[in-house]
Length: 198
Image 1: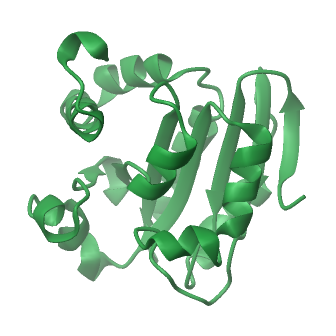
Image 2: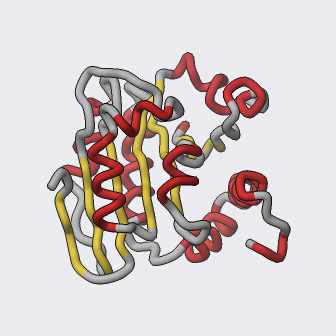
């Protein structure tokens, strides 16, 4: 078993960090120190790979260094799946720029407080392993930014308490209306849904 289980019952959440390169330096301890949710199960993989880098947008990531993530998803069938990444400040525009969709085929990240970014997970894992009802998100922490990491840690601790996609969206619409509307629009476009199908 490549993951650690906290809590029990439904809903089931899977949080993953340290996915590639040196991201583990900024992200792994968040999941090493996280506590069990008040309701349901939280499975954590604090470190997937130390050093080797393959983008999660490359389908081979999930058959190579990220194979343990797929194993956990297949075993647990989580309702909520969260990846925690980190990025260098010079890559901020690449991640949040409007041309990201045309350039690499995935929507731009939304910027939250303290340069924490919010976006979807790679299309490969989203389409192949999760239902439309599942909540699948990526959080990006800015490297060497203490406030970014502290804020991301608070968000992750809040995420572990959400029991559904709708609960997350209502909270986001209240705190980050612009970013939440973008996330909803990206989700609908990803699945080709109309407004009444969400």
